[in-house]
Length: 473
Ligand code: BGP
Image 1 (cartoon, rainbow, N blue to C red):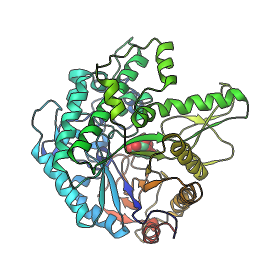
Image 2: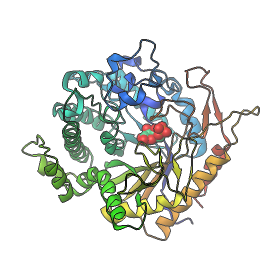
Image 3: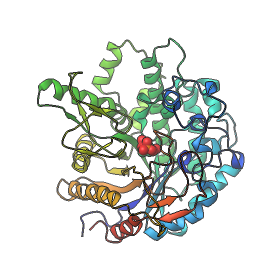
Image 4: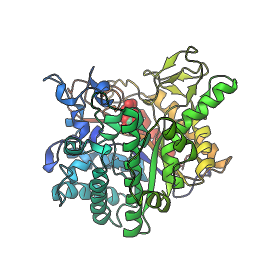
């Protein structure tokens, strides 16, 4: 026995906008991600600094076709089933269900699509794990209200949640309210549909959007529990422990503060109140939030059931701005750790950091954890034998799974499951590329959109199948 639960949720994870395609099919409306282009302007749009209306006419939008899972989901789910997936994490595109977000009634075609999708998973006994909002908001809600900066979004989101909780009652048990909720602080348009107006106080806007999302998340949790007490609702954090660059006390304090920037969201969602350090931060920065009369109670009474998180790398912090070299990480840039290797995109590889991160989260919240993203983005080459020899991916995953099991066996962390990111190749969130691949399944498509979308099993496909069959042993 590996020490993991018997019903451990092994599987993979994706997001609608990165794999579905069919961006206007079945009555779908435009989502905020559908106007984020590939290429040089991508980052500025994701940051909310360059307006999506100001893009060149030939801009290419990778989410419009992605890997066309919208039309190929049966084939893809059959492959997941062949690997023995116990669960599959995916997201609903909000704008498939409420094309503008303003309608009173949902779009039946969108709901029917997800119903067929979920039924297909259940046919193979794969537990659906649904992210309600993974980096996309109906674009109309951005145009009408400025997205999450407005409390109107709370109502629109709760209306959407009520529809999906009722429709999929008894079929979906595991929900997550927002993917990587802390991403809002770093890429506000991608994370929360926030486009800044010139001269406005960006910190104020971001914290107001955060507050609105936190209240919406609590209301969704309440609703999910009322509709079916069996429902399990989780928060979802882009995690990765900050290490101090040196043993200087200043660096230790800096690392602690950086961690808190991330914990802030989860502290509210899991403990039910703004932590003292966050209140002081708002005060010091003269941020005044528009808060509803019942918000405090709503947050207090509706905390999440489990803590989901993504883990790609640990992070490194120093108080001294002139020290060390910087490198990329899952959106949050970090100092280079000389003890670690890195991926081709500069993301550092730290399996032990996963164990450290799991312990930090479990110590802090004492709630079950769920690792819902982990993996290696790499350039894969499809060989003549129609497979990819991705031993580097196997090595990465194996090392992380070993540390994950240690956290459970040796440290006693309560862990629900593990889903690798991008179990089938998909569009990269940070770069918009296809070239940055994570999957066990190769998809024939390149950065510019060329390719026949055919699927091929990589070497890691059989490896993961074996890991699942042996429950990690
Ligand atoms: C997380 C997102 C995912 C995903 C992943 C990998 O931030 O939740 O949507 O894409 O990171 O990142 P990337 O695609 O940039 O390599």
